[in-house]
Length: 617
Image (cartoon, rainbow, N blue to C red; front, top):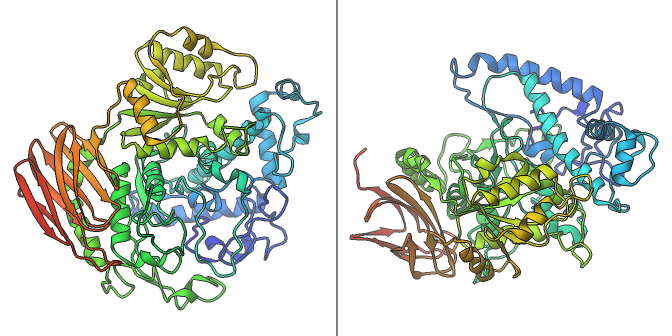
């Protein structure tokens, strides 16, 4: 806590914390001054910087500490804790004009500006303004965004630091010497749950494509890596069927499976736990979520992307909750989730067998899997200040960068090339060189230190696949062409990508800088490789119906005969199939396929679902 979400009134906060019930609490406000409401009961959310709320949060967390301390590891079984939920009030993938505009938050913004610039004269010089004091500097709004980008970069930094600093303050009050966990929402346009009488916050259509920009601007998880462990959540649609909302019917062909690609990209953001997977929330989210195929498919996608664990939700009975605790969710179904693998009385549901299947597999193979690594054939470099500016930039000829990051992220994922993601300010040259090929979409400004870092990366043997024009200004908008001058004279190590972000165009450019995917697969499928010293794990996902597929792992073929939306993980060692876990039963389509796998001299047949191991425990 103190805000826990869980589809409760005010996200679990007491009534006295909400301005809806306590006029002495300052509301959290959006860019236009309107209060920020909690979707589930339409209560007004409090400013996290309100002094009374801040004091109550401190009192609460210190009381929680006293309750949990005797049970914390090693004396007890609590091995980690999560503070807050999806950063502040579930806004980790909300646009930057959603919160932080009330007076207490704006005062924090002004304090950050003073810390960054020192005095108002330095601020005015950098911004071309004539403010008399920091307290006169307004935050940006959709109606009147600043005409110069540095102000947008400043506010993007504040959106990040606001989330980080609150987390750290709460952690200090909790005071437990345990790993700190987070649960960041997916890199996706916000998904609207099936909440009655909920009016979704409007996002201007011309800015909707910038969802990846605002995510990277306010969630700088690499720069915060010493503070908490990254974790992701799964609420971005139905990955097996490429459904990005809570109501659309499945189409006969999924086409370019963007839901899957976003899911995989979120898992690749940084290694950590899949903190929330949709094990049976078919009332709040898509009705297909009642089928075991959906959470198993998505759990395997998250692990393929790099997740080091996953959460399974078991059912609780909330039918007896009163309106003072839950005015919405309990009315949809008496248990939560409605189709959980294990119900509130310990009874098993339709998802139980599938949950037990993958649980059995990872209980045996989890240690070996974690000793392998997702292959990293290149790295996507991100500079958060660019994303902060692009978050407010409409997609028109005068602002071509708004939305480019999302297009590049999906395009790179679609190639099948193994990659990771790095925030440039958080990595040293030595760390960047661990993955010697980097992809970057340039913006026109960058801190001089970061320009020199990239120049050194190339001069020491790194390769850049560069898109757009290199920066010509530093982070304070002063002329700075360190990187541009270096790249203009570099004889090797730089390739300019002039095509679009389509798969073939990106693959062609990547090949020119020496990147060839370790895994190759036909259209309508996807495969991911984790490579260890001796062993390899291959994750396979079928997007079509019944097919005979051949995928190639480091040039070696794996033949698969699959059913509709079959997914699997295979453990390989040289020319042997050491183990497998297959989810072949498609409950939605009523298909129990015969899944056949042939690798080297090994061939196995699985009727529907199954896992097996060729070696004893």
